Length: 529
Ligand SMILES: Cc1cc2nc3c(=O)[nH]c(=O)nc-3n(C[C@H](O)[C@H](O)[C@H](O)COP(=O)(O)OP(=O)(O)OC[C@H]3O[C@@H](n4cnc5c(N)ncnc54)[C@H](O)[C@@H]3O)c2cc1C
Ligand code: SF4
Image (tube, rainbow, N blue to C red; front, side):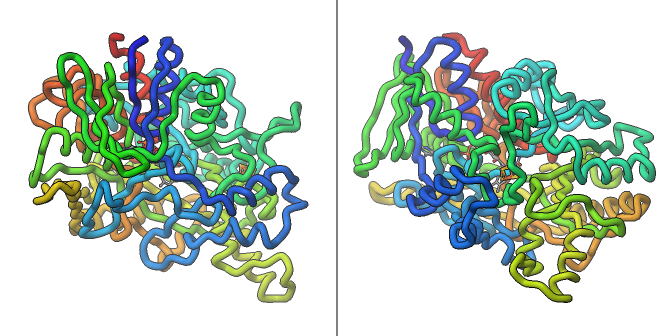
């Protein structure tokens, strides 16, 4: 059997692993693989064995202590079970020097999906005009992926531009706040031109409540802080299944430093968990270490020192919205994942979609307002009234209108690992993009009598975004050292494939996870073995 390695265990690595397994391969997964600390894990296990009404306050305080709600100014950080373990930073074997916000990278088992939001949309062909592939190439893989993960979606107006790519879709919250919001929109801001403004029920990788089986989501109100029941899809769920079925070999605690092709074989240089440097030989490797670390591995392997490579990123902003009519549902007996997606365009900015996720209930808001079930009185009543009229909108702007990072690798003088240096200059264009997008959003919502609460708008300009890539762009004609071909192969290599968002030539606003997974599955499927 061919010896195939996959670097990483995030969304893209596991998508590729699942395809390779279907092709009769047992891949070796080389991963750093940080996990949630044992104390929190124990607490999560205990809570997952109980119905939410039996959870005790001490356990809840411990794992739902979310510092994300305490940030001010720029966008706060989202935690999982009260921990930031899935955010990576500089490590001895892969040091980083950041000038500007920290680089978005993960060293977790399952990567960023250990704490992501689980919102998904395919891309619109219009947003990927600069790519050498389009939806015709990806369609088969969207379907393959979405048929094999918990998926909540419905066929509605949004499907006119963004197909659901599944015929057995069930929607989370078949009735709920989204019905009211969508009814308001339909009445007051009807879709006249679906190429400019469109909205519909959110698409989520979540196991929604199934009334016939009495299984799935328990409406506990803590989706943004981590689902103890594991209903929000994570790559580690699939990885654990693959390990249990002996379909993959999982090697955690490993840092992949570089790769090289020698006589039709790939040599992978690693630092193992005992800090020993080793070389392992494989027939082929798929690198899904996340955009930052895959770029680092390729720069290190090709000895690209002191040269700037651009890492594209989206811009995000969060907007609180006031709705005069009460929002149905009472937290915490609700799902706090986004209920509604809206896509709109700002002509003066670009012809690309701006993506909005509307969450009518959000535990951060309740925490920020200091709402406590145990406290009674007028102040608590007023706070609850405010919360029941507030919707949180998370909005993304595509990489074409955003500030990007530059990455460069500084060769170390001695035998120690090279330093990855990142810079992110804040320029006026990003401020303009956020300002004009917020104004347009305000104008759209005004017609539906929803009001943007301007003083509380926050943006990712200073904090940076987690939707990054484009540093090793796929091109029909590979010219530069950091270009890749349609199978993610850097210049001059045949058996080394990069499969994560670093190979996407631009980063659309409409979420990055699904398209990255589909592209990784496409590469793993189309490679000749
Ligand atoms: C808070 C948050 C919320 C998000 N919400 C959404 C959302 O709702 N929808 C969406 O589409 N996207 C979302 N994203 C983005 C999305 O989660 C990421 O784009 C996606 O998970 C990246 O997957 P990946 O496979 O590229 O790798 P990553 O998730 O970056 O994982 C990298 C993997 O590689 C391993 N690794 C890294 N370097 C090395 C090395 N040198 N050697 C060995 N192993 C290595 C790590 O251990 C890890 O397993 C969110 C991100 C964050 C942080
Ligand atoms: S509401 Fe969210 S956190 Fe609670 S069970 Fe449902 S998906 Fe999980």
